[in-house]
Length: 383
Ligand code: 0X9
Ligand code: CA
Ligand code: CA
Ligand code: ZN
Image 1: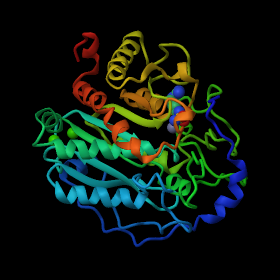
Image 2: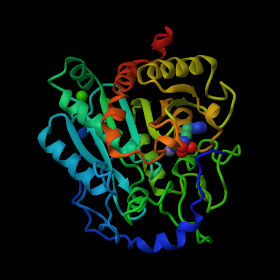
Image 3: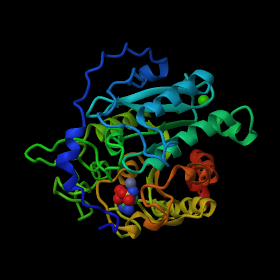
Image 4: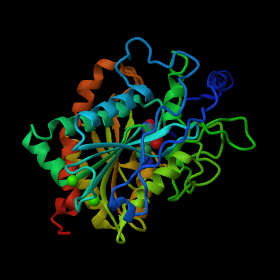
């Protein structure tokens, strides 16, 4: 069990009252997807107008944290970026959270409106509500690639030869709840009620369908911070992310080759499996394990994090990385960001670290983008 897992039960009764009911926003106009998306059978929806009201409380980050982005600020930033660079960035949504917030999806590539034959890379952030620095990481990835395109030769080459998908806030209900009152709620899960319980929230990173609940790496108690939910993909946020990744299988081939799911904290680079301490297991042979390790260590050499198999940190079941690999063969990593300890701010470092601690990962991100054409070439295997 994580040394960082905190008891939140006592907060539930009061905090839940502060959260307004979800707004029923007018449905957005239907998207006009480009032809390749239609072929893929998946209509990308435009990011609709703000789908949920501001929280009843302040709904803002406290003093010292003002540079972190709320859900609304994130949306505004992305929409402005897309307006300024319409040829390389496109903002849409892959679904709707339990409380009705559009789940933002950003694509960065040359000819961004076209599905080209380029390796696709996915970055996801914020599965855990209080890990706000990860949202900044995803926003930084988008901004850096977009602004580097046409200015920095290396970034131009990466953007031109890859299709980069970014999900900057995969748990917006939890993130907004965490800042709703003006003091952090220490919230981790989504905001989904569990039938038959007064407890709120499922740990999205225990709700994935691979080895769900198999191995003591999650809890069956709805009050627990690592509650796995009543069934795999019971959370709308994981189910819709799953479906979107499935929509990237085209002509029988998964287009996404590499993925980082950003978390905090501990400064680690982690790879599958999390559910077993064995280096290899069904679906993960010795060569794949060596490949995961080689790219993981190479990325860690760039950012100074510690590289290890996920289960060496602690055993988890039902995580996104195990699912991405087992179901789709995606080279999927978790990065646990700054800091390395609770004493340095834990889940809540002040906003002065956003710049240095996001750019710290630039070289590791570039490496993941670079190897996206054939990750096994890092151990001398051709694709
Ligand atoms: O427990 C998690 O979901 C992640 N750590 S966090 O403190 N951000 O909650 C780690 C997930 C990585 N996978 C494994 N350790 N198996
Ligand atoms: Ca392209
Ligand atoms: Ca493509
Ligand atoms: Zn996390």
